[in-house]
Image (cartoon, rainbow, N blue to C red):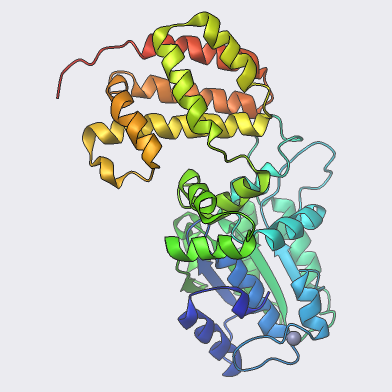
Length: 384
Ligand SMILES: [Zn+2]
């Protein structure tokens, strides 16, 4: 990846390039930025720039032997460390065992977040485990860094989401940062530096990476999905709460359709009317769609329900929703209030977890609908 492939953050590009040009390359750096931002993309572009053999004052060449390998993230002096899952069949929970999948995901979606990454393993990860950078990882890294460089002047270690390091991993990394191997650059790519050990943090040069504006995000999506209309792209951002990584993820899985809104309206009506016969039919139809589609639909429903509360207590014009959604919610919101919101949210969240754990989705939707028929009838204790 070249710097020119990343839009925005112009000052940061200049700063990074100057640090190489002026021989002021810090050996341990923290690229800090929000989820869905371009921080990992910057780490890739910077690593490529550092080792490019034909670099210009503004970018790597993209064509030398080193760049060609960096383009595919397969350069032997580029070490990628990231959280991994302890799933069946994995003997050693280290990044190297997941490198192929990670390269594929990160090259396709350099704005990816942890959810997008773990989603790759959703079929093997039935219990919804969360991943870590395990202790074995630091042993592995120690071993690799004790070897000679393969072909470049610098060796670059990119640690993505270091806040997922187990404590022992952190302590071992600290040792590496305290006595860094020759010509080795560590780039920690983090979303939340507060979770990192203070002792690690104090050794890092911190670079804050600005997240994109809505306009920039739409531009990136347009470049990536020229065949999809702007309305669909903008809608994907609304669905994803502005997280670019999620937006790319939903656009690729093609799980974003207007069906979610239509289905939600219909579902709420049937639940309110306690029309059991029609609810059963609705559940049968809804669960014909795939599991990922079902969990996206429930996440969408959760958001709509929470929007109702925002309408009660805040300005409805601040809501990031479509005109049709606004129309529906302006009639529906009085049924959701402080007397039932917590329980409704909990039930939906629980159902999402169960769907993702491969439980029987018909039963989940049916039970949830029955609970909603009761919860939607709970009256408000006081009136505005
Ligand atoms: Zn090059």
